[in-house]
Length: 274
Image (cartoon, rainbow, N blue to C red; front, side, top):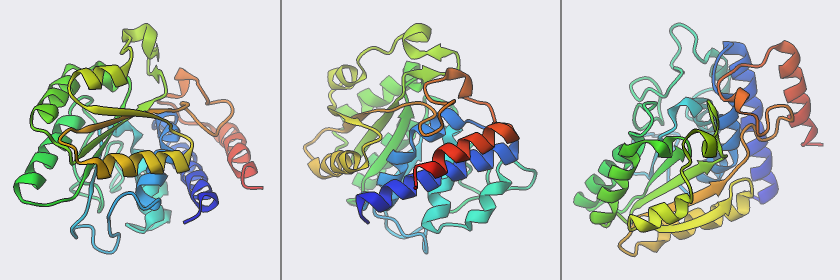
C-alpha cells in the first residue's frame, strides 16, 4: 500500500474514532487519535503478520497496553476486516462486543484484555518469552502511553525483558506528553523515556509518530534486529491529532464530542482528503 493510501487509511481510522465515541457518548478520543498512524503502520503497512480471515493463525501479536485507546484498536481491526465496520457504532453500548477496554473473550483480533495501566508490557513480555520457548519466531508489539510509563510495573517488565534477552519484543511509547490530569512533565515527569529504556538494557529509537513511512521503517528495523535485546520506540505524537480543537488538549483525554463538535471534527478530518 502506498504512503498516500496509508495516510488515507489513518484518516479513515480517525473518522471512525470520533464517530464511534460521539455515538457512545463516552470514550477517549485524544490518545486514540494520537496513535492512529502507528496502528495504520502495524496493521496496514506490512509490519505485522496477521490474517483477518483467521485471527488464530500463526501471527505477530499486538498488545494495546493503553487499553483506554480501544477505539483506535477497534477501528484498525474493523477496517482490516476482522469484523464489520458498522459494528464500530456499538461502542460501549449494552451487549456490544466493543467494550470501553478491549475484551479478548468477545472480539476477534484482540489478543488480551487490557486497560489496567502498567500491565500491558508485562503481558507482552510473557507472550514474547512463551513464543521463544515454543520456537515461534513471531514478534510481540506493545503500545504504551507515556503517562502509563509512570507505573512501576512497566519498569519491572522492562527489567525482565532485558534480562531474558527478549529480542522478539517491541515496545512503542505513544509520546504525546499529555495524560488525564495535564502535561506528563507536570503530573509526574517521566523524563527521557528513550534513555530510561536504554538504561534498562533495551535498544531504543525515536520517530515522528505521524510520519507513517518513518514509523514503518522504524518498526520493521526493530522487528528485524534480533540482537539479543528488546526494542523500545519512542513515537513523538500529538494528542487529538487531526481534530483542530482536540490537538494538544488534555481535556480531550476522556470526553466525547457533542453533535456540533463532531461536525467540526469531521470537517477537519474529511477536509484533509480533498
